Image 1 (cartoon, rainbow, N blue to C red):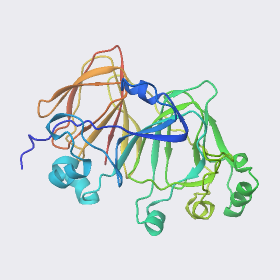
Image 2: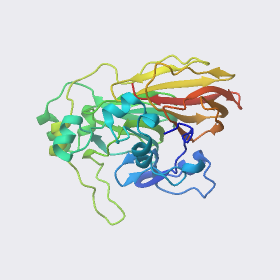
Image 3: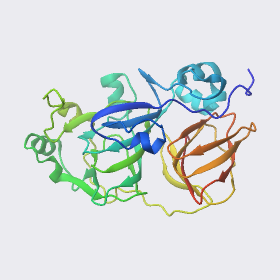
Image 4: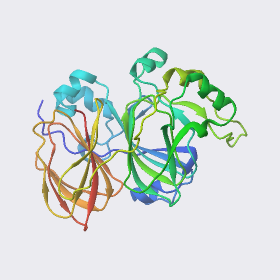
Length: 330
């Protein structure tokens, strides 16, 4: 099988209406349609069952992500990635627009998720694309707690009193390992990188009701088995921006995420990476070249997956500054 049939891929966004969603995603992505209300998420690249991404560009348009992995295997995802994950795509990429607070929630780790749901756990990473002046989020606890304390606070509607609340600004970054209680606050617009999983346990939902007058289901017992109860002194990722080279934001066993900011031509060398590469364009526009001589444009709100056999080689900004998230496994 030749590699010439693969090229940098774009996918149809999967838009998700939510009770807390806003109207920013369509405009941010330049989709051209009227701003849709209550769209909380755009799943940019997904292998989640029932929500598998479909290619939107080139001769592979209409093919699903799963079909590509099944056909091209290590040429598509990389030899090491294919050996580890097989035909399952390991990452889920999203944009999130929170008009209201999301529920207080936690995600299980791999062990708990496989026991309870026969699925992966859910470790994730947030990059704050934009934030209202008074925006905040919850990440972890503000002290060491016990399962009994958490249960009591949930039942008394006081769970937020033991959570670590942080004021948030544009370009902040947060790592949310499985087990960390968290909530995205109102007024935040986020890029999210996570394991391929949709396992979420809600502890509390601010007593909200849906359009039918019903409260959303909570999963307290499951959550209590999944929570990391430890206290950490630092929850926000510390990094120093640098124009012209990748800056590491987060590295874990599931993904590496770097920030790329450029105001002039920049070259890339991925010889040490045995993985596909994803670029999420946060701001600006640029022309890129790949190893198989594919030249395309990327602009704000677009997400591109580079197959392992055709990784990026260069980026030429069209605007004064372009900002990308670079994601790969390993």
